[in-house]
Image 1 (tube, one colour):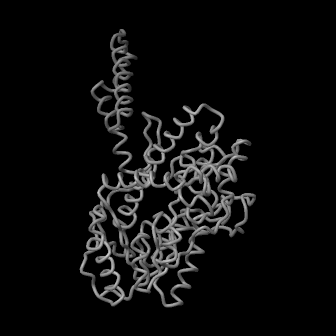
Image 2: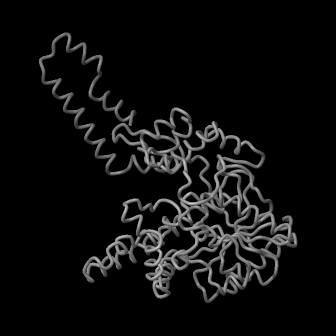
Image 3: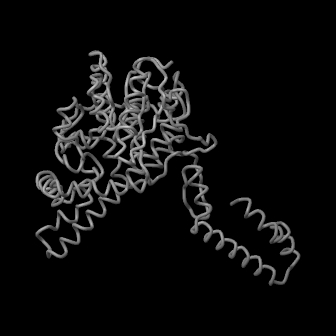
Length: 442
């Protein structure tokens, strides 16, 4: 028998209907929604939906703040959840950004020196580090935290900078912090234990073709709802001066949100080019927004599979799948099963539905380090390495290497062989031996 339910994780459309049972509240883990402005492009819940049930963590951070992090989000959301518990309610965490959900439910983050959240004038050490050369940062990390450096690619500047920030601000390596989390009771290879026991995760998923069509339509609906006016106003108030001073930043804060940077060319050239050119840039922005949105949806589904369904260790709450491809069957396929699952958990009964199970490849290491000398590339992850050695670029380098070796052997054989040359050739071995050694090394 499952113990009494402590929290539910699902989507906002179901959450408002669950709220009618009067046992929920809603912290929203979608990072772009915490910022004021861009309500349409970040797909914030409507005023009507907010009147249906109480929402938290929406529109409370100034758009000019660029150093609001997942740690800040976790700390504020955790305090809200504890308050909801104190009022004898059950919080519903609505996703959203699965990285933020994971950071809220599991002990996976590392806190460094506390900083007061103010404006962009506050110095963020990680942001400062990201301005430096990626290879130089990686070399510095390898000196203070070689274990973490071996797991990160030099081009992954944000993660390299974060690991350096952890060491500089705490004096403890990032990898040591993670080892401590993993060794805690209930911890595992992906992080520390669950922070809230007795969770229930509802995963709303759809056929990929249906989902792609639905996402394209959502972008069209955003345009009809006034997306362009929203973007123009936000650009004028917050980004126009940055662009003029060549210091725009689409990697931090709300400016990294999907939907704003895709229209950069259109916004900065509007009124400065021909109507035909402006229209082409607008179409380009719309198409880019649709592509990025669909790519992000695929990424979120992979996160559910890799970090929730395939999560190793004991601290893995059940994940119940709800099929949402056919919205005409919403009541019987989504709402009724969701209510039954949640009510069963509350009453301490086993739900009629079975949680989703996926086969897990326990031998695969997603952070293994591989160096390809032929291609002069660093590859992180077993799957990535397997793909690399089958890639056209690698096979081309391998063929090129074999041709060079063959030419070198032929040139030596064509020379008059002196006793010294004969001795040297014997030390080097036959072409067949060289070929075997080359295959073995690759």
